[in-house]
Length: 169
Image (cartoon, rainbow, N blue to C red; front, side, top):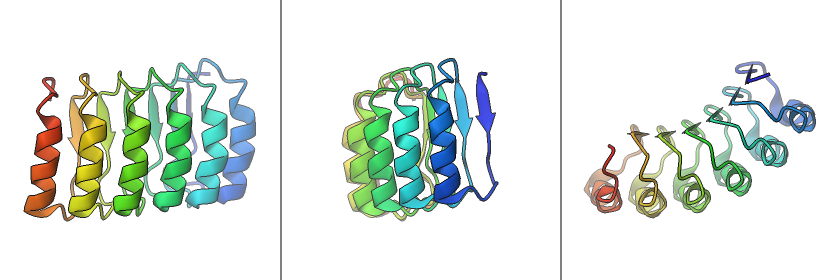
């Protein structure tokens, strides 16, 4: 199996826990979509442990799940093993600046990342500043979606300083 799409299925934390327990055997999985499932922090924590062994994973869509800062912190800890990951979507998850800081720390290991969506997360200038440091080493990055985050001039300035090393964008 190379792809699983369980988007918009009302999984919640309980469904995420059940899905996580089955992921360990899917070592050839390349794509997982769990968008729109109201996973919350508890569901993200459950899935993070299941994702850690999926080293062939190329794409993750966790958008529209109300992860918040706590959920993306759990997810970020599991990301470090996914060194082949090329695309991550955590759009519309209420991350805020605290979540952006947590996500930024998990990005450093994702040197093959080509696309990241952090739209609609209320990042503000502080979140943009936090993420810019995490993005700086991702030299394969081709696409970033920061839309609808109220970055303001201060946030865009911080973001711009982190993007100067990214020659592929």
